[in-house]
Amino acid sequence: MSGMKIAILGATGGCALSCLDQALNSEDVASIKCLVRTSPKLASLLEKRTISPEVIQAKLQIIQGDAKSIEDVKKCIEAVDIVVTAVGTLIYQQI
Image 1: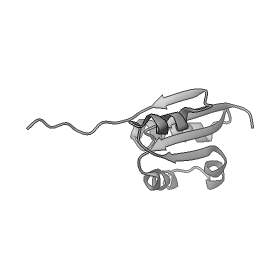
Image 2: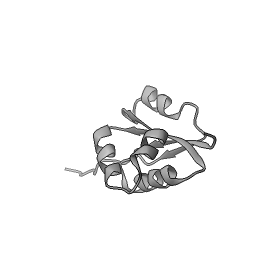
Image 3: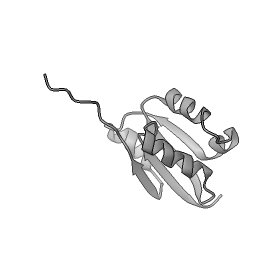
């Protein structure tokens, strides 16, 4: 399979999930690595989309980890052509 190799950091958020959906459905994308804190959450979100399990199995590698960990990020972005980062932040409330 030829095509782009993509890494997505923070793939469970709205914008990144839409990017992931588009990438999974694109014939121009060969593989996708996603770095997420909670892999079952991403799996659940993907189940709700109209993406075939075969496409998910063939193209997607889910890496559970922390975007603040250099080692986790390196593992995700190794040997990819494009990195999409959509790492969110916690709501900050000043006391």
